[in-house]
Length: 335
Image (tube, rainbow, N blue to C red; front, side, top):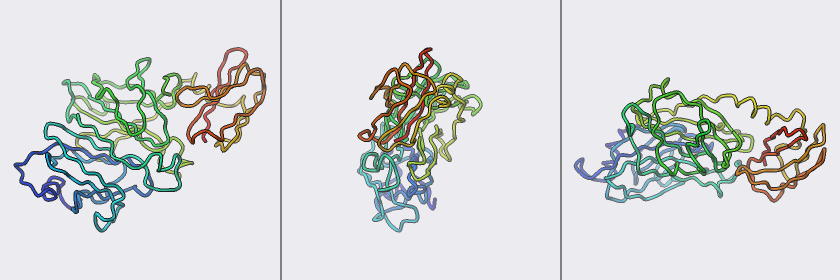
């Protein structure tokens, strides 16, 4: 950055250091190839030069009580006229803010398209810079994965985050967690199926007394999204800098067995209009399910069959096959 963030904010707003200010952190989480680095303007003044994907600023003092026009332009822009996104905000000096850049700019190469998940700033106005409870970690979750549906986040049987959709922060705000090393699961919105599992080593990372933002980032299916960065959970610290990846863990054996398709042939996958399935044995039921847990279609007492998917939205689906002995296999489908 060519100038300090604070001085740029003050110059851009044309106010003195004694004016009202609000504390603000900016997190770059747009996985669009065009936005791998961006320039951020306040009015006509360059604030962040080549601000990289999966990077956060520290909390800084920004002018409050006056309108501020924020512009986001591709890297190496020449002026705010190059901005692909602008918004005007008036900050409240009694609040602290986290602004997360999410969504897509490109008009092609991504599914769902940028018309469905356009570039935006997700805003949280009750931010913390340190934990709410001494010794604990205050953890805020934001869903920034454009091709992931509404999900839950769980620790064991406890639901930490319920039904968070793309672009949203957890509706209940920060989780106040004792400093420890946790295992957390990203599940379908009904909580029934684990999609991804991660370790959250709060003790190992020495995050006691800290307030952190956990960002769902990247693409569940990079092959449908210009081979972009894969899905993961990443941590933004209050002091800013490169986001920290939470280590992905193997799924539990029962789930890992379920998602294997050794006894069930499914093709094609990814799916355009029709998906075929064939089982080595007669199955009690085969069901096509979306990520909310809703059964779209089902058949019973067959060894093979098809499901029509031409009218379904692009995304991730599950084919659930229940055998006569009650065992269940799940196959992930991408449309």
